[in-house]
Length: 66
Image 1 (tube, rainbow, N blue to C red):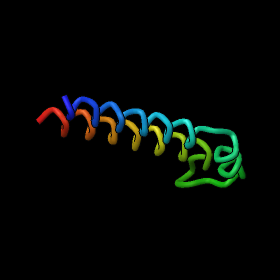
Image 2: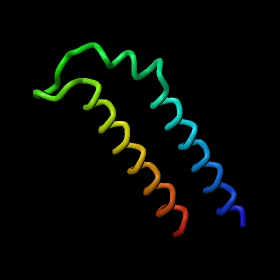
Image 3: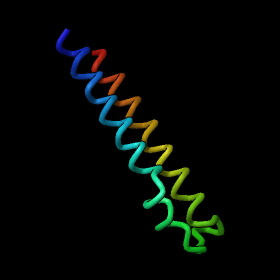
Image 4: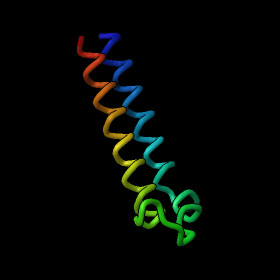
């Protein structure tokens, strides 16, 4: 029971982190017109933040089920 509560709290924290990462002030920082390996900086940031959130969710769910 305690593991389920801890997992739920961690998932809520990841949701809040996602809201922060995809909020307008942070997105405006990366909308400068620069490029990373030929990809616009904003798109690179969005993809990396999205991928890191998915990996973090996988870790929370898989590690708490063991």
